[in-house]
Structure formats: C-alpha cells, structure tokens
Length: 494
Ligand code: FUL
Image 1: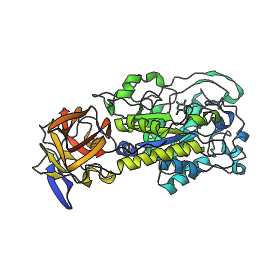
Image 2: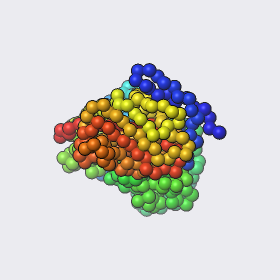
Image 3: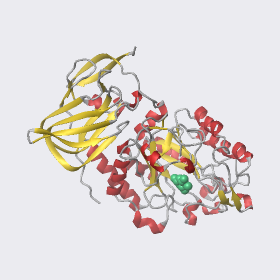
Image 4: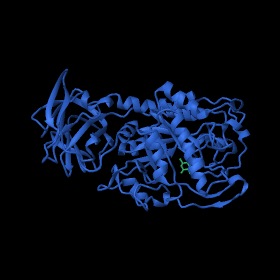
C-alpha cells in the first residue's frame, strides 16, 4: 500500500495536519534535477563571442582571438538585467560553433587567453559565475559539440581529447550547474585548422552520448541535460517560444535510440511541441527563443527587440504551458546588454511581479467535492509558496473527476488562472474546466488540457465573480493538485 503521508495545509492562521496515505505515483516521474529545472521557469541563454564582433550568427572558426576585446564587459549588468526580467538563471554560451572558448581552456589555443581581454587573463565564464552567485541566479553552460575551428573535428580524438575535456573543465571549475545545454546543429563546412572543408559526422554515434553525458551525470548530478531529444529536457521543436496548447511533460523521442541522440533531424516539430500523453520518459519541453531576431548582437536589430507585451505572450505560451522559457540575450560589442533590451526586460519583469504577487484566491474558502480525508479547506499559502510547491490536495484513489470551489467572499476580478499538479507524483490530469458564478449560475469560462508543473490560462475578458469552480473533467487516476490561483494581469506600459 501507499506510504503514510502527512500533508500540512494552512487553515486560516492555524496549521492543520491531515494524515492520509499518498496517492500512488502515475507514469514517468521527474528526477530531482527536473523538478528543480521546472521551478526555474525562465532563464536566459547568453550569446557573446567572436560573432558579436564579426556580425555573424555562425562563425566559420577562423576568427582572430584579437577581435574579442570588450571594453566594458559586465556580467553583473547582463545577469542583473536578466534577473530584473524575472529570469531565474542563465545558460552561458561558453563555446559556440566557431570553437572559441570563453574560458582559458587547456584543450585549444582558440580561447579567451589569446585575446587582449584583460591582457589574456580574462575568464568570461567565471565572471558569469560570480555574478550569478552575487545575484542569486542559477547557471548552466552550453559548449557546442560542433567545432568549426578544431583541426580534429570529425575524428574520434576531437570527442575524447577536446570536447569531453572541455566539458570536464566546465563541469569541474564553475560551481553547480542547473542545466547543460546541447544543440543539434552538427557538422558542415568550417575552418577546421585551415582545411576549410565540409565535415559531416553521424550525430547519433559520433559524440558517444552515453559516455559524454556520463560526464555531466558524474560531475553535475543535479543538472538536467538538454538536447533536441532529451534526455532530461526536450527541445520544443521551434524557435518561436511556443509550447503546445497541450504540452505533456512526457515524451518518447523518435531517435535511433530513444533519448540518446540530439540532432534536430530527430525532432518531429509537432510532437516536440505537444509531447506524448503516454510518453515513456519524463522529458518536458524547453522553448528557446531570442529577445532579438538573432542570437548574437547585431546593431541593426536594436529596434527589433521584443516588447514587454511580446515577452509576456512568450511567457504564457511556454511557462504557462508547463515548459520553461530559455530567452536568448545578446550582449553588444562593449560587453553589455543594450538599453532597449534592458528596458524591455525590466518592464516585462515588473508586469510579472505585479500580476503574480497578488493571488486573488488568497483568503477564499475552498470546498472540495472529495479530498483524501474529510476536510474542508481554507485556501492558504500551502498551495502558493514556491518553497512549498509540493503541498497538494489529493482525491481518493477512485475519484478522478472532482470539483474544487473557491468562495472568494466578495466580488473579485481576474483574468489569469494558475493551476499546478504535484509533479513528483507524475502528470495526472488530462483535462479541466473552470466555471465562474455569474448571473446566479455557473458559467464555464475556461477549459484546458495538460497541467503538469504549471498551467496559466489567460482569459480574453476579465471575470468578476464571488465564486470560482475547478472541474477536473478527465484523468486516468486520482488527482494531486498543488495550486489553483487567480490573478489580474497588470497593465502593460510599453
Ligand atoms: C542553435 C544554434 O545553431 C544557434 O546558433 C543558437 O546557438 C541556438 C540557441 O541553438 O542550435
């Protein structure tokens, strides 16, 4: 039978401990790292390197390290702007396809120590680490497997003596990482030590992913591994920041060996977007999309920075659909985020704070058609706080379509609904509906499918009511819900 669980629910000001048996977990479950990743919700991927100076997106690999000389590089400014935008971490592009390492690596001469930056004593990755630590932000790294500079690229020695050693350096010397990021752009033409030719590799076998990812498992056991087809976090399949209206955390990748080979040839767009309800793995989606048209800074895109309203839309379509948003940030040649980017981030962060800091369901009386045990609940912080994100309300085993009613006691106006499942017990809910008490009867105001770690429903119109009802309309098992919140979106000032 199930283990005994003590769930603590806040009842008014007094704590009520409800003794009950925990529901049996359902389907694939997240690891510790995946749970922590889910909580991160939004982070930035920072592209800064030789491409910033050559005005390219994909450097050929023949760039002179001397061009890498930012005069005002400030990791604090960049990470600080990300934080103001509500991002909780960054992914540092430590090496892009051009092979230039932003840290003083022992594996290649093509690195920051050969640039004039800080007279060859610079270490951009370390500067990001220090800024993250000071600002309470998480850090991850992206070290491109494709290396258009290395003469060894295409040979086994590149993987064993260069790429894996680079990963070892990054995973050993820069503190705890929450994500290690891999991409699917692999092989093609490049400089390759002067050969200037096209080199193709078999992207499912060349990198020996089992062993390569084993380095992360060993040195950074709490980091999730992102790749087009996992193994921990899947690519959503587009760079538009769009997870599906339905987006399951579970997924079965179409790769030669499921979950074992990045490479966008294996991503079936629609399936990355939606996941699979019966997927074999817990592999939620990451939506990577840049705040600008390009990933690297280009001065002629200064007027094309996404507006706060556009960023908000991305947020609802990614984080709001149970995915994480990985927002591309592009420092300029000075080594700073440009003013327009900083302002857009700050305004976006303000909207998020103003919207989600006030949960209009707080103080409501919560009545459940069925809970494990026979308690009437008062809506309280146990269902709200991040540090208690996994307190939850669960139904008896046979109850799969319960109702949960919030009596708000007075008319409240909202236009955003937030639902969360306790994902430690798997993704259990198939579909829900929300009703509001309007004109002396229940009227349906929203429906949704997958909930998982987070579901935000952004209503077209404001709803003013005294009572709101959640109906779970379909689920294969009992329910373990950890949040049912109501919010009013802050006014957007551009
Ligand atoms: C892609 C890369 O090819 C782009 O240049 C960029 O780094 C993006 C985040 O990932 O696969």
